[in-house]
Length: 194
Image (cartoon, rainbow, N blue to C red; front, side, top):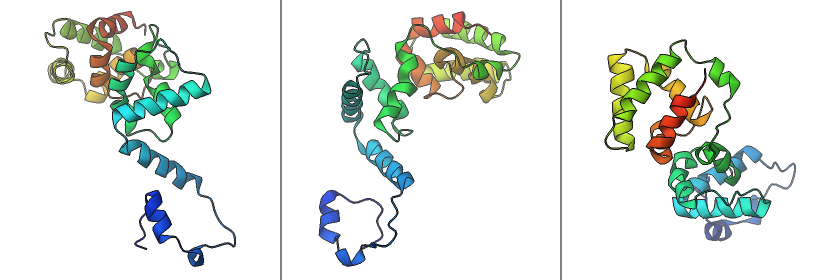
């Protein structure tokens, strides 16, 4: 009645009217269906979404049982807002569960000439960080790379993102670094080849 785009099943049943059904040339809007699915995904708790994503992949036969479910659950909020389908989470978070990240060569090639210097400075500042939490990681890197070295944030954090996730676009960088942990983050930054 009120042009709402989302309704519960009970609301749908309550307001359904055959007289409002257009039977000539009905259109099934897949974009709208994707939007609605994303809406429902965003409305789930992280734990419920994690459970559904795992069940989805187990049913498909592509869930890796070696994945630490507590880490997967902790990372779920990083991608939940960007999800449209249950199958979207695992590819976006896969980099957290592999020892050797596959680097997108286009992402590597797009890095600025000072990427090596940026990575070295990041390793130096992160090695001395006492509290490995998102805010502290972000603050330390921003202070070192942006304020002290004078590098624009996009250029300062791009080499870190590619070294950590293998991609130009990834879940939030500093949260991902916290989830990966100090040792793994530093290993990836040190081991990244330009």
